[in-house]
Image 1 (spheres, rainbow, N blue to C red):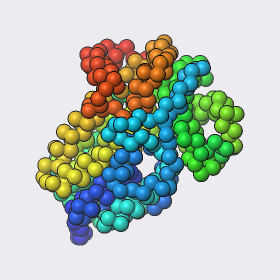
Image 2: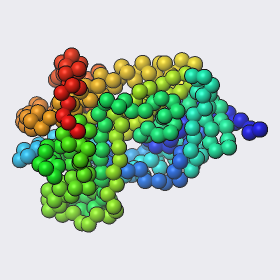
Image 3: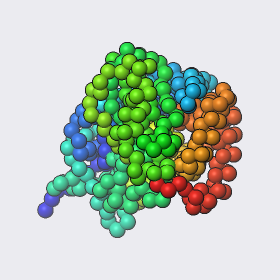
Length: 408
């Protein structure tokens, strides 16, 4: 008979979201155990950009950002139009972002969780254990663990998500991205650069963007991403798209050869469930990814903090309260982004939309806030008004948007 070990919170996944919930809960006195399939120091494929929203969450977790390269704003390029805008000041978020390669970011976060008292079990695949509909713990090989709360923080859906019914909603959009690194004399630039006008091999506009994210360490992160709503998505070759984008930026960034083979990943943008009796899903595992930019680190950090805080207040009500809080903070914006992605899957709408997105300073500033994850249900000012009006219109048009989506 196998012995059963106990804790207060069991976390599946040691990425930013898992580390955030572990750190916050351990600091509050909870006994936390984190399980991750990978060894310590693994490199998670990512764009490495941190929005001002992510910086705010890292400050909330008391993470030292000395290892990150500070970013002052975003340079948006659409055809021949280029606009360079600073992150907005005077909001509830800092006026700067950062680029911090995930290997170093993840290490800083999980080291902080360990310092707070969390235990981390590397190279250990944990799967939820259910008693009826309630999650009562996890199984890790021959080990059994029990806890009042299990947190799914394993990123894109896998075996653990399938066991909980937390897989992606099949009819909703998702994204694909690919990135690599190259040396560049512009590695210390203080602007992220996003090219919003990409085309596939047939010349079809791609709803997505190409990025140059300077890391401040002699290298830049170069990559491209695309939404599944585009015409011809099933035939899209990410390596070809990356090479096409590379040819556009190679000279202006004086890029050296790729430092590693380009690596691709999937961006989940929905989840069938994100909570239930005895468990919650956070970050990418909960589908908390901005459909307009593929960014989810900030949402992962915030959702981890929310889950930990509610658990420390009342473990019994934490899953339900967590779901309500996440819905209030994120669901409106993310649902609007998914609906908008159906629109820009049509090439002619995408072309017209991009002309508007950077056509004036006012509209470009709204685009900046959307691309920076700075918009949600509480956003004041013009961006908030435009978002709420768009939310109402697209919610009404949702059935039509789905019926008329571009052929993948």
